[in-house]
Image 1 (tube, helix red, strand yellow):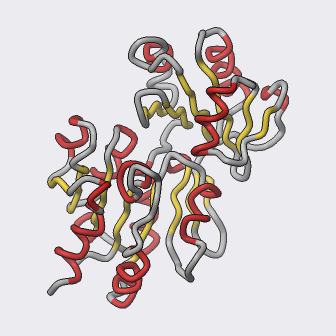
Image 2: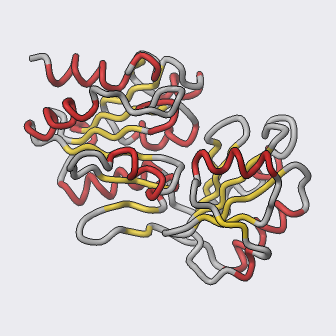
Length: 262
């Protein structure tokens, strides 16, 4: 019996316009009536996720910044942060690479050095409260993630730069132009494992949905793992099942069929 559902947001639960289905609230309430926990897990910070669910009362668990932040009650959990030296290495690599810009993520606010118009327009889709800060190396808050934006695409430009950080940190590509760098041990799968242990829920009792590389570890923590039909081919190789595309309400379609129609 399923006890926990975890889903990615962009490209998965949300449609291409980044909208939540009108059916979601009713389906969520039906899940609650069956004592099924619901969690959203995103590369985006929790404070950009929560407003999309603010129109109704809920107990949704928010996994933000690819698992670096877990919104639990009574207190949120910060699963990892960079040392000053680690953060400096990442920022220097960004400063030394053309067409690349960084979003520095803290538990409560995102920052950027760049004032590039294209970058800020793109960044505000995921980090609406982003603040331009002249020298991010002078920031005092805890740094839990650095999101890198490459206007030329990672494949054509800076992919090898960020791959060099593999082993030292977690490097998770979330689209053709975005890659997230987190402290070692931080990923969506580790966050799901923490929640499973906290709630006494097994992998066999977990259902998960994702569409891109930063969802791989999360899907591996669920016996009932679904790649979206619109997802990357690599994700379809990891998941056990394929869900309809996000623009066809794929997540909710599977939930209704598998959990709510019997």
